[in-house]
Length: 298
Image (tube, rainbow, N blue to C red):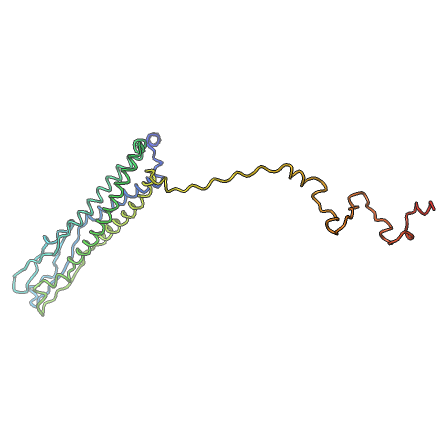
């Protein structure tokens, strides 16, 4: 644990938690699968030729081929159904250029990704000095993205041609014994090309990763600053009107008096201590229900 803590203290491993370092790690990982699945491939197929004279037949013919797929150099001996005579059947095509180009790009992408991760971790200051590191990284990433597009497309087309060249049904058309009636040519085993299909898939996945990484490296260069839109500055709110607030909060002014409601001035007796209603308002005259003290005085 102490060694790990020292390494973490020396190198900035937190870069792998950021998109720039994490995508670079994926590029390194996927490039390994790309060249491993293609460069280490070895396949075979089997066919049989049954002649009218069974003694001249060959019921198990094995044909092996492998990377870099120079199929024009691969051949096998097939019976002619004319005694013990044999004929050499060569496969058609040389697809080494597209296969080797694909593997070469994958190997160089692996090496560059590894070197870039070392720089990210242990030489972060040098990488950002004068902004040269991000600019170089951006240019190289763009070149690799283009190369992945070209190499993956070329190898996808080359793989299609390899499948056609190693298809026993296509080989039967060139075999003299298969053209004669009474003889029977059949396919015993097709070549397994699932590994080659996987290599093409990893090639286009690398293309997506390298194109996507362009944006993260582009942001490190600082070239994206003119395109960033900052939010508009908020206007400063005016200070509250202390005089107006005091006026509105003053007792008596916040309530609407009865003068404004009825069209004439009518004092609000409820606010002046007249809690009990006078007899004048109940009877509607002075002669009835007058105050007791006034009757006593009379």
